[in-house]
Image: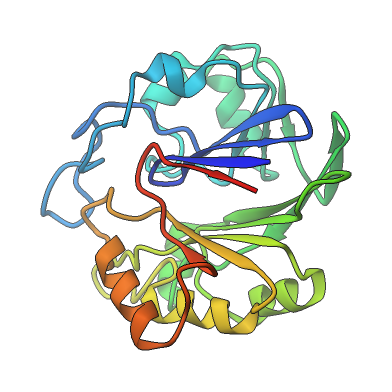
Length: 250
């Protein structure tokens, strides 16, 4: 199995002979409006041409419809017949963008021998912003002779996420770790402290920090997270913080 960090939460996840593209944001640098009034998003370009990002993909997974997870580039450039899995309630908007094969994942679905289970998330640190930002999802991927992968998605660390980690005991945990903030929201995804807490909660897992160094409302950089991990005794073997374009092989 391999995971390639593309940019932000866009990843190429290859397992069981299939390649899954997550949260496709395919516009060039500064193709989306600013979220914090600092700089347009994404703040960096793709590491290679879009054609290489989407080459030979078999499935697209969309955790939710915010523009930093499914942008106009994804809507325009992805093949319209590509299978897309999403959370319930998002399928109509995706179909309205011209996609013909869109499936909401209620609980668990089996696709090409891969068990995909949707998990909850909390995209805010307080109730006001939880309501404003709406529902988000993560997903667990299981296949024969492959590591169990838990993609937590846009969520802070809270009791439900802790329960998933300690119950499922995934081999790999993908966290969104930029500590993004909107006005008085507090962190709307995991920050450095919460990412380190995941590492301590799951010493059996490899934690991969994504959704980082790409958005103007992020408060945690890759270097910040590395420094925080070092101070907390988290090894480079347990917490991986890939650069854009980097491939991790398991």
